[in-house]
Length: 324
Image (cartoon, rainbow, N blue to C red; front, side):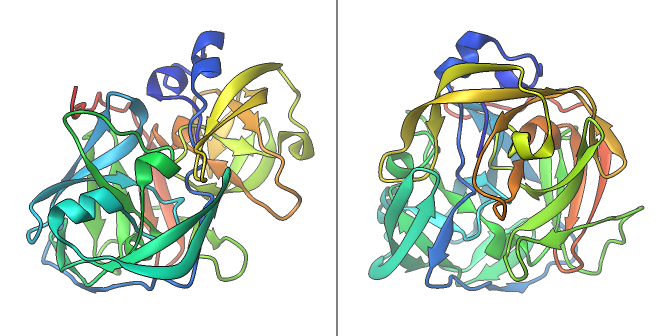
């Protein structure tokens, strides 16, 4: 689920060299068996702002620093396009959290990966306590688009089965993530969302691209926007080779990318900058992904319990880079 890092899509005019070098990840297009349930949450009196950061190798997507309480400060990847919270095997081993074998697998853009499982201790998350999260476990750097580098360790992916317990506020102008108790924050002029399929955990939002309305998965794990551009009738701008990064036993694949330029982009009623859409042919029933090239310009509230969103166009601030 992604396009290239933020330097590519932030300007909305990616160079050929940048797109050929990195077309990041379709991480959120992952499904797990068996279920990883929604954990119980004890809500605090008010949300505590969680700092958003980026990595030297990934300056387009969002990572969040969490003072977990029981396991100290941790770095997590923030991904509304990922169905289930997932932990890195090496990070849990360093924390002494035991894992167990399962028959579960995750299926991503580049193949299937076998999973282990772990139950995390209670975590302090933005002023709230998340109890006994059941976490899928795998080698994240080796089987996904999440990088590894000196100076940082990404503990895991903060996914939908945890986020759906909150009204999630992403404030790129302030550079913070806020998690609100459901019912505590009425949204202004909300845009209705719907579930992926009938019962899927991920949420879809209406987007209008050059006058063509479509429903796309809200995917902060995608650096760019991916959809079946031919079906939507968006004209092809160019083709070029690129490296596709995502979930699978091999996390890279070289492909020919079909690029479709879009001048007018609307999230509900809110307009953002022009973007380059990458064609993703997954069949008539597979939804596209609305990524950071659009979401990165929005101060967005996602009310998971009520399946609604409220957005304001903002100018994102430069985020601290961890491990640089």
